[in-house]
Image (cartoon, rainbow, N blue to C red):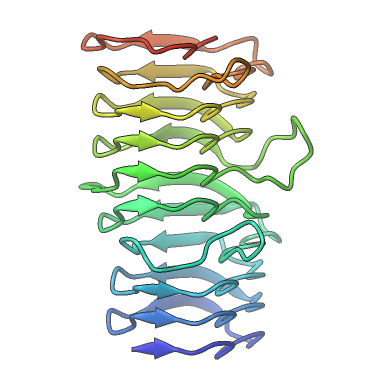
Length: 239
């Protein structure tokens, strides 16, 4: 049921690591420094996930993350997945269909993301502030998360700066989104297409902090498609 603190810290584990459904707690630094791991599967049974649990797992290229809403201390100071995939071409992340929310800074600290996919039947309702923004990049430098980002129909809230300064090239926002935070997609310089379907989303606006500031600036702008069911285009949304 429990994997303790530093249980496998810097162990010479290779290949895939599958966390079985019997595990409910993964301690601080449990797998820190397992640099030969290539694949991680974290199942929905996990309720507690410690700081630095998978820090410095530099060889990882695939992560299946299915924790509904673990009691974890996720912060820019004590990240869980810091330097994940740092030595490869990037990590393909799949969000499992038990995940209810993605907490603040979960994938924001030196995480070499390549793509983000939500599993069919997703129940995720919230992506918190800065969840996928690498705050360690220089201003204007894009993080590695790229390709198409298609948010699931279950999403209700996208936090401030959730995907800021990523390398995504296309974006689909579903009908059910109720709030999009300031700077949520700011400085996504490679963004070439946005399909906006949110029927009536609130868009808190703070003067120079609109959702899409400078997005598409590296590719000559983005094509914008407004869905047929959209009733309200919020304050400063595309300012």
